[in-house]
Image: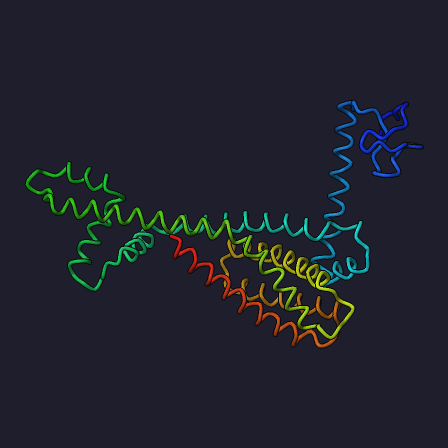
Length: 309
């Protein structure tokens, strides 16, 4: 790649240090002319993309197929070849949550109208065992909203139209239905937006559990456990997204079970590589403890959202 010409001046434009040759010994910036050609900008961008892509591919390869290897490399100080664990986790979690909620949103839209209507009436607390309520619900089934009901009433002869009291009841029914649907949608959106934030709380907890499990080993600091936690959750997001796509394509229940088995085996092998010892039982206890924590956090968060609604 063609390089930019070196400046005649020997002061670094970035930090002011004297530059003996091409690169500043203090900050590392090239002492080249500041006005770059478009060709140089394009070449520089292309080189950066290729360099980052190669790091990403190497990182992905070891993350997916050599459990615990990246954590081992990081704690040994071998870090330049791989994508930074925090950056990789943030990028992967963004892709995961965006794609996962897109898939689940499509599935919800694909529900049959009958199912949606039934759920909406359950939300409005109608007792389907009561004959009057059942007849009322079946009548409302025909209309999407109040406008649809009024349009249907207008098409009827005046003698067959509902009275003022019935119309008022219908109006209140659709208002209540709309409020509850908006409330559900708002709660769902809040949960989706805050799910990644919850994971940032759970990541340190997972690392804390690791520190407690391996407290006798003095060679591991909490930060080392945190790196392990980042790598494991990054793998989980990538693999779980893969199984979600498979489930969406083939709709086979076994895929979810297979995914859980693979994640457990991956965790066990990672623990074995990094910490040694009896990894199976520790992996099992870690999974049970972490699953219980997930349940508590998600339940608490759901209750909090319900109260705020």
